[in-house]
Length: 496
Image (cartoon, rainbow, N blue to C red; front, side, top):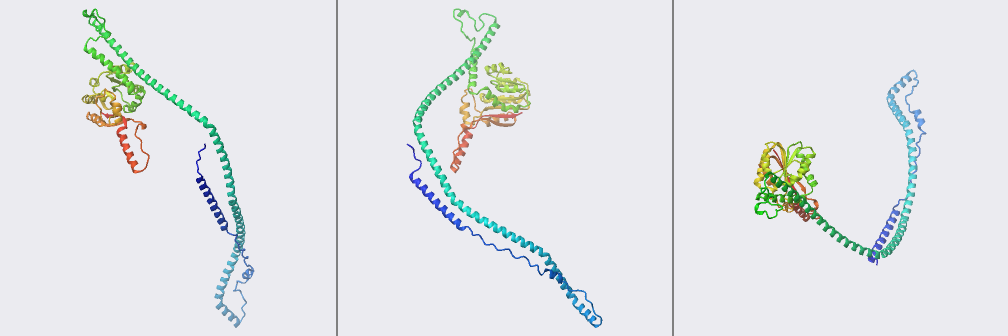
C-alpha cells in the first residue's frame, strides 16, 4: 500500500492558495490595463519665419546720404541744420545697421530650428504610436500567459500522475524481491561477520606467531654467541676439567648438562643475554617499524648539517645511523643491548657495546661533532643522567648540538599508553625537568621541540553550536586536549 505524503486538508489549502493567487493576478492585470495612457495629441509645427520685410530693411537702414547743398542763405541754413542733427542721425543709422545685421544672421537659424522642430514632432508622433501598439501587445501577452502556464501545469500534472502510478506498480512488483534481497543481505552480513571474526583471530594468531618467531631468533643468536664464548674459553684453557663443558671426577658417571654455567658471573651473563633478545622483540612489536622510526628521526638531520663524528647514544636498531650513512656523514652508535649491537653490525654500521657514561669518559675532549639520544634518558637514574650530560658537554666540540628525545609524560595519553608499558623505564622526565638538566650541564640556546602529535581522530571533538554554553564547553575541550591528547614525544636541543 502506497503511503500518502500529503493530506486532503493540505490539498484544500493548496487549492485555495492557487485560487487566491489567480484572483490577485487578474486584479493586477486589470489595474495595469486601466493605467495604460491614451495616445496624446501632439501640436503641429510652428509657422515658418516671416522674411517678407527683410529686403525693405536691407534697403532703407541708411539715414545719412550725401545731398546737394544750394548756395546762398539756404545753403548756410542747410549746413547749420545738418550739423545740428547729424550726430543723432549717425547713432540711429548705427542702430539700424546692427539690427539689420542681426536679423540677417538669424534668418538661417530660424529656418533650421523650424525644420528640426517639425522633424522631432514627426518622430515623437511615430514613437508614441509604436509605444501604444506595444502596450496593446503586452496586455494581450499577459492575458495569454496564464492560460499557457495552466496548460503546461495540467500536462506536467498528468505526466507526474502517470509516473507515480507506474512507480507504485513497480514498487509493488519489487516489494517481494526487496524482501528476499533483504533476507539474503542479512544472511550475507552474518556470514561476513563470522568471516571477519575468523580473519581477526587468524591475524592475531599470526601476530603472536611472528612475535614468538622473533623471540626465538633472538634466543638462537644469544645462545650462539654464548656457545662461541664458551668454546673460546675451553680452547684457551687447553686442559680437561677446566672448561665449562668438562667433566670432573665427581660427575664422571653423570650426563653433561646442555648449558652448564661455570660461575655466577656466567649465569648473570646468560640471564642478561636472555633479557636482551626479549627486549629486542619488545622493541620490534611496540616501538614501531624501522621505516617509521627513520621517518621520525629524519626531522633531526638539519640540526647536524655539516657535522661529523656524530654519536648516536642508545642507537637501538640503527635507524638514525642509516640516515647519516645515506648522507655520507661520519657517525657511530652505542648501545648496551648486545642483540641491538649485533643487528647494527650485521648491517655494516659502526656500533659499540657498552654503557653511555663509561664510553663518553673514554673519548677525548672536544672529539664529537654532535650527539643524539633518542628514547634513552627515561631508562637512566637521575644521578647517572646528570653525569652523562656533563660528560657529553665535555666531549662535544664548541658549536655542536645535543638532542635528547624522550616520551612526553606531560601528555597523559603518552604517559599511560607508552611510558608505563615499557617496564625498563625508570623515571619519567617532564619537559621542564629535562630542559633544566641540559641547561645546568652547560649547554646554551636550549629549546624544546615537540613531535609525534596525536592524530585528530584520537582527540576530543567540539560540540556543534554558537551560544555561550557551547563556547565554554569547547574551551574546556581545548584544555583537555592540550593536557591529555597532545604530542607523544619531545626533544630538548642544546648547543655547546
